[in-house]
Amino acid sequence: MRVVFVMIDGLRPDAIDRADTPTLHSIMARGSYTLAGQSVMPSITLPCHTSIFHSVPPTRHGITDNNWRPMARPVIGLLEAASDADKRSAFFYNWEELRDLSRPGSLDYSYMVKAAYQIDYGDRLVAEAAARDLATYDFSFVYLGTVDSAGHFFGWMSDGYLEQVRRVDAELAKVVAALPEDTVLIVHSDHGGHDRFHGTDLPEDMTIPWMIAGPGIRAGYTIEREVTLLDTAPTIARLLELKVPADWEGTCVDEVFE
Ligand SMILES: [Zn+2]
Image 1 (spheres, protein in one colour):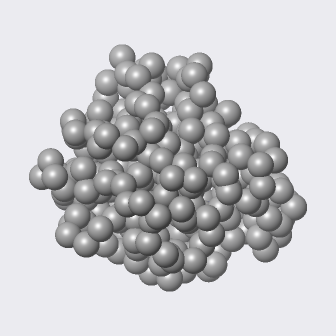
Image 2 (spheres, rainbow, N blue to C red):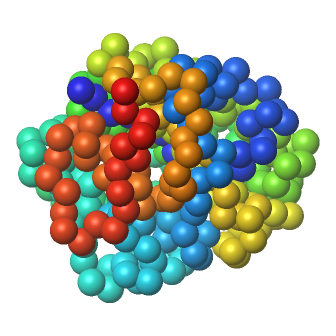
């Protein structure tokens, strides 16, 4: 079993229908999904990602803005758990602040190009790098940062934002086309946004799409339970048969399994 986790930063669930997104729609049709997933507070990128990869809320890990600092009380994360199980992991990303989501020694490959603000090509570089190399790894994280940038530039749900959602959906198609058959794909965002901002507890900021598809995953299924950012790592741990660290607070989304 292989897992590819694609993050579309700042993607609001209501943008999936407002923009032309055949790739996201096909993942939902052949997998399980919710359009009512929940971010964490503050709904800011680095706090959210620290929570995703360590399955604890910001009150526990202490990362509350996008500036680097060590976790208040370190937690063993997904990448460490994967490394302990001799799984090979790769990161493909374009926002360099995410480099500290894993401890030194736990990542086998990293592709980073500082291009999250380059909305015309930043995610193309990442998607093409991932498509080229992801088959080598048991776990790949593919971070696409330009939808969030378009939200900050043009406003969430504006024409410019929706056009960027369409473009990133087309880049996502390149990743999907490269997936080996034994791959489970997870796609979600870290937060939404309103006006040109995010970070609050408004539903527009807190509500996220969360979807999963692949062998052993229910097709065309709408997830009934509440899913939060803390539940991604436990779900990936089940797929990769990892030992779940005792500190993790999220739970595996068991109902998506056949
Ligand atoms: Zn973000």
